[in-house]
Image (cartoon, rainbow, N blue to C red; front, side):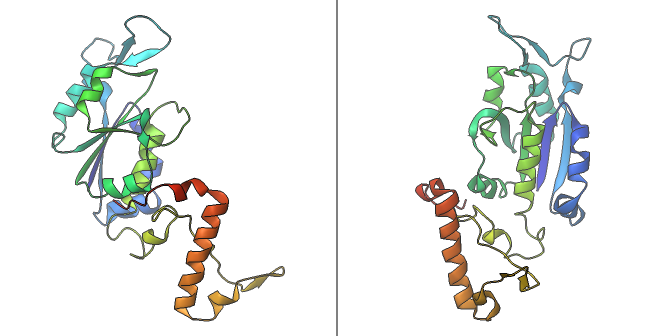
Amino acid sequence: MKITILTLFPEMFTGVFGASMIKRAQEIGAVEFQLVDFRDYATNKHRHVDDYAFGGGAGMVLSVEPIHRALLAIEGSDQAMKILLTPQGVPFVQAEANRLAQCEHLLLICGHYEGFDERIRSLVDGEMSIGDYVLTGGELAAMVIADSVVRLLPGVLGSPDSAPHDSFYEGLLEHPQYTRPAEYLGMKVPDVLLGGNHAEIEKWRREQSLKRTVERRPDLLKKPVKKN
């Protein structure tokens, strides 16, 4: 898989993409990252990529031309899944991560300043938001989406069974987890997990997932389950 990110701050990605599972994914060839500074495609003297909004208003708006020129210069961008990162986009949930993980080329465009020239929306396939709050730019959102997608790629996680047991994968929160010691400060691991009966363990985990979801995120139970 190839992930291209259009950003004004490519240096922000160095630490995140150089560690943990994302680093491993690159080392095994599961993913290739391309960071594109679309300021390089500005045509004005001072390399400005934003301007004042027609009609007035506070803040600056990202111009359509440098982003369009950057897309034209990126090999394979016409076949890529192009996503604009904006608070106006659809919520990024696990089902979207599953869908994007099937793409051969994912292209994320990071916003900045007050917003986008509306014509930029005609250049993309979709818009996504990672939550109902405001960020300085789309870079953090791009990191979140990249991490969520990359961990689903074959060979990235240590066990192929890890992802399907994560929270949200099947529309439920994950069940409680325990490790050694079996007792600590009077707090004991549930007996069912120590008995070796795998059918009972799976039943218990399912029940706990449902219970935890009802208690903490009952809204999830009202949504249709969608895996891809």
